[in-house]
Image (tube, rainbow, N blue to C red; front, side, top):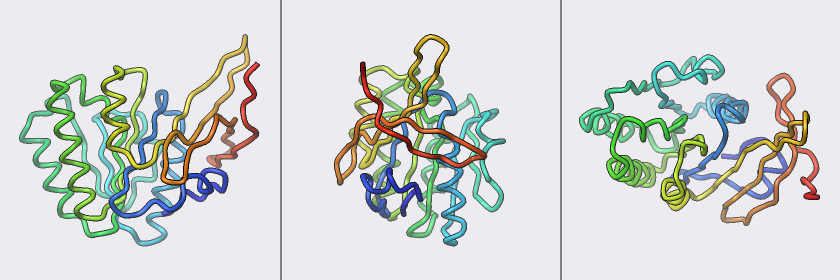
Length: 203
């Protein structure tokens, strides 16, 4: 799978079954990237499953028609996590699994339990050759949390914003991939389309 954004695809390369793409972001920044991935997978007749928390604002921004939707409530007990893993194991090879704001789980369950769930989830994805895209809001994560997520990922995109007075600039970089990494580049979103601009020059 490729994202369909030339400058990103050039660095990321092909994202294959069993790979894990981690998107570190702020809030819902970059949701258009997820929408593009989901639409592209549906067009390719790839099975799509979306995992998100109850009441998540991202739900109304995503093309969820024709996808399998798993909703996480506040009562995220061990049995529910096991049920989710069981559902994912039922996906056919080559499916796309999108988990949105998985950092929310850390609010409701002990960290060690979520670390173990993530390891089991990635193990299942690798076994079933599923493409796994997961987003986290890095503002809610401790350094150890970020290290755990990054260690499990094969590809990482880092999305953030820089503020200079009243000017806010959206930037992203490839933080990890088999093909290497990149510096931060400006990006813009117009009518749902993402355009990657010039590298950010630090002054």
